[in-house]
Length: 133
Image 1 (tube, helix red, strand yellow):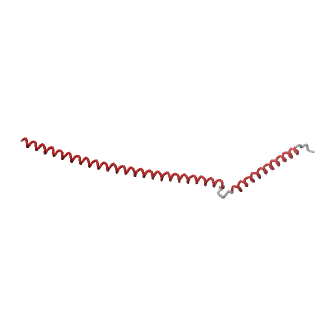
Image 2: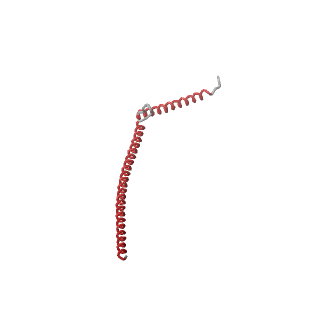
């Protein structure tokens, strides 16, 4: 008879290994089952996208479109405001030009009157000089 005690220890170790393998198999199958459920619920397509991802992307695209529309509307409003301001500025410039021309005409008229007055004074002085001479 051999005096070997390793027999019962090997049996205990092999039982522990089997138990671990069973636990591992159980955990693995649970993970696979959960993965299948997630994939079934989310309907993953060939690119790996899920409806959740697609809706999130669609929401972001809608936000971007809204932002673009707002920016275009702002630009359009700013352009209209700018055109209105330019129109008023042109009207003011025309009004100033008109007043300038009217004032210039009045100055010319006043200069003509002064010239006539000088002529009358000169003529009057000539008459006085001739009368005294």
